[in-house]
Image (cartoon, rainbow, N blue to C red; front, top):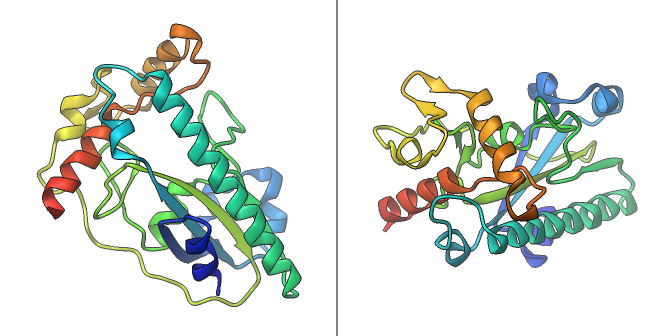
Length: 219
């Protein structure tokens, strides 16, 4: 029922994980209530390739607006889904797609990418983002916690393999064989946020590179 509902409203991805697998990624503000909601529904929407292809060496206005549009749409879907669950006699908590609770740590009420990984929607890439097997990192994610009994999905064992396209694309050199350097990434997106009144901590270059690489692999 919920998968069909999310699909009708435009979600491309749907999966379910156990909330207790995500304890370390849940903000203190909601931990107590989340402990009573054993299932985490992860939904995702694919970013438009045409928008990603406009990115050259920095974020731009069309990517910024598209990023916000997709986040807003995800928030609408999760809000409606939570309402549907409640009308069926169960509890639920929709968690916004891109609301930051700690700017320095860039953390949220829950890590959507870790929820999606546990829900079988992809794997954690070298770029520290969820990588979907077909869409790469070119997706946005949101989560709904609930006590409605649901069938749980299994994480995938896939990984990036030998692909290094995100490393090549990263302007901050934050991605290497040694791992992901959060501080370098954070300083770069902070710098980008000051340009042209973006006022948003985004980049998109590794997202584009990853999405293109997966598209070629699948094609």
